[in-house]
Length: 294
Ligand SMILES: [Zn+2]
Image (tube, rainbow, N blue to C red):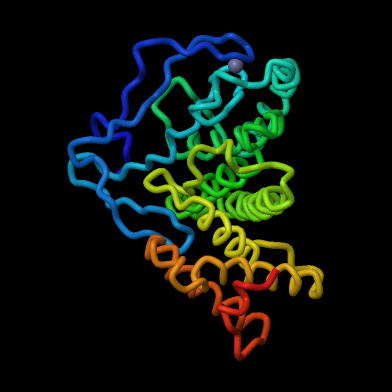
């Protein structure tokens, strides 16, 4: 059952939003969440919350609505950021409009951000936001936002592939997973070097239902490195996976300090630690020891 045929899943705001880049007026689409519209299902190993379709409303994908998109110039950003692009970059964001339109034409057909969003608009919103965050200043933590943006886009592209296996969404999903891996690991590295804090990102998600915070960031950086990181150079890959393994060990290998953490992150981290140790051929891996190493 497709979402479009079911009533009252979203509404359009009464007040207009004005695009800060091209000054186009439009009405934002928002998700209605009450009355059994969202039935939470399992949490995946990527910390994505799945939802069960309801009889009345069909399947609902909350992720389609978390990015605001200007229907004219395709400038896009998370809700909290949309109205505040850096003033000195507005001209650049405007100039890049043609490249966003070209991207839209290459990857999608018939995008319409004034109508209720389909999965295509949902995926496109993340693809556009991924490029627009290049213009945001480091105080707003654009790198980690780009990681989360790419990951959410990949999830929706996988959904779209499952609906239309003949189309090219699997290719797009892979590309977005690569980007997610790159940005998650880069954001973590910059955070650890003190060059760009993740503190400007109010919710590290990665999904909309729960904030797994800094542990979620470390876990996903390692998970994505293993599944979607570069693998052309064996030595480099070994080194990166070894770093990832130590990071993951710190999530659960610290004895009492781990006790207050959500079970989901502890379980997933433990499992990933073992996968990484196996991949690196280490038979007597010791998370307690790994957790203490620099
Ligand atoms: Zn605009």
